[in-house]
Image (cartoon, rainbow, N blue to C red; front, top):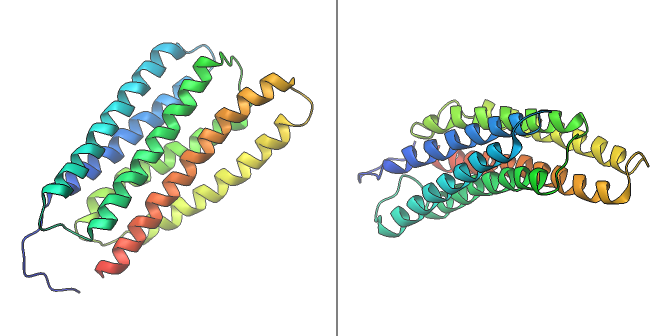
Length: 205
């Protein structure tokens, strides 16, 4: 274990935890948004509020990074983790916005599976963040998120096959594909978060 002779700036941990908890809220909003009969415009407004809250936390981390002489781990890794978390939020907000803008009334059933993957990845990420302080018991987290991302890839491929099966007209295909692409980007971004945390944990061990 690396010996540290200087104090560390611990508020980063709280900011990362806040960002991850915000992703849990966003993922649960997505669950509601894709449900038939939901007030999608009102939910999309809540999602935009989540996105703004995420931006504020990202900016707070970046500002703290500029002001801090001592950081809990490498500055580049702090920047990368903050950016990865922000990418997840941006992708989920984009999917939400597209569903409303395109007025997509009925989404394919596998979109529910995509969102379930995101909700579980968000929960795991939020559970993992407090463990950054000790860098312990994190390996199961990144293994499971990688497994979820692989599962999400399979669902995404099934969705593409369905969209291009001839069941939908060309305009509907274009609209739905943008939504499922955004959800796939969110799953990829969760994997990037997990990979970044794995890299940090390896360096700090």
